[in-house]
Image (tube, rainbow, N blue to C red; front, side):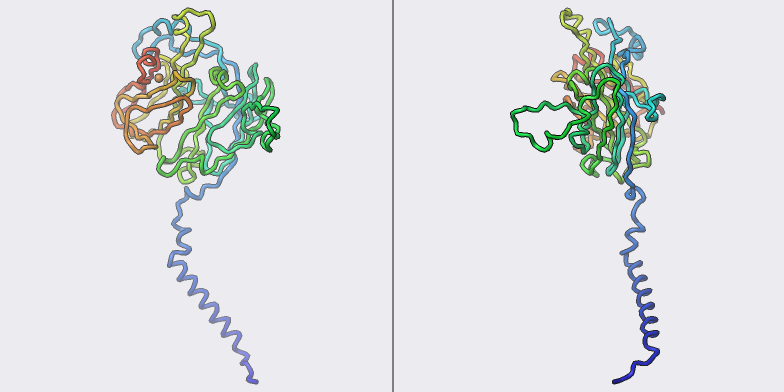
Length: 367
Ligand SMILES: [Cu+2]
C-alpha cells in the first residue's frame, strides 16, 4: 500500500482556502451578495408595535366657531345659523396610560379623532378609555383582528348552530362608561397600498355599539397605512410633503316635532364637522406634494362630490386626473395633488343642496 506523504493534508487545506476565497470573490462580484448591498434602506423597515391612548369624551361642538363665514364675512345663513353648538362625543388622544395630557392635533382634523398610523407588518394597540356616558367601542376597517378586537356589537340568533367564532367572548364590543379596553389590530399586506396606489392610503375607525347613532354622536377617525417601502420611522409616507384628511358628512341634529325649516337648519352639511368655510388650516406651499385622504359616512343623503378649485388631483385608483371625486357613505379614497397654482381656493361638495347648506371650505397655496 502506497504511503500518503505527510505534507498532503497541508497542501489540501491551503488549496481549499485559496478556492474558497476565489469563490467568495466571484460570488461577491457576480451579484449574489451585491443584491443585499443595493437594497434600499426603506425596504428594510422593521415592523413595530404602535400604541395609542384614545378616550371617548363628551364635548360641546361648534359647527361654525368663527360665528360667521370667514371667507365671505357674512353671517351663517338661516336656517343653518340658528344654532351651531351641540353636545357631541369625540375620540381624543392622550400621551400615555394616565390619560392626563392630551396630544395636540392639527386644526384641520376638526371633529375627527386622531390619525392612527401603521406600516405593513406593524401591530397597532389602542388603549381605549370610555370617558363618555354611553357604551362605545372602536371598530377598525382594513386591519386584521379577531372577535375580541372587532369592537362591534353582534347579535347572535340563539337557534343558530354556534360557530367557533360565535362562541368567542366578543370582548371589546361594548366598553361601558368609565371602563378601558385594549384593542390589538394587525397591519397586513392587504391593509397597505399597492405600488400603483402610492405610499399610503386611508381607512376608517368608528364606534360600533349603536353604529348609526355612534357615528352621528361624533365617534369617527382615520387610519392611515403606509407601505413598508415608503415608511418613515414615524409611519408617515416618504413620497409626499403633506397630508390632509377630509370627511364629508351630514350631521343630523333634528328632533321629533320640529318644523320643516327647523329640521333643515338641523342638518349640518360638514367637512370635518365644520360648515360655511369654518374649516381652517388647509395650507400648503407652491411645489408641495399633497396627499388628500377623503372619507364619507352617513346615509343615502351622503353622496358627496369633493371639488377642488385651482388644481387637479391624481386619483390613485384609476391613475387619472380629475378635480371632482365621487364619494358614497363609507368611502375611503386617496388622491395626490402637486400644488402649483398659488392662491386661496374653494374646496366644496358639488351637490347643489349641500353647497347651499354650507359644505364648503377654503384651501391656500402660498407662493
Ligand atoms: Cu355633498
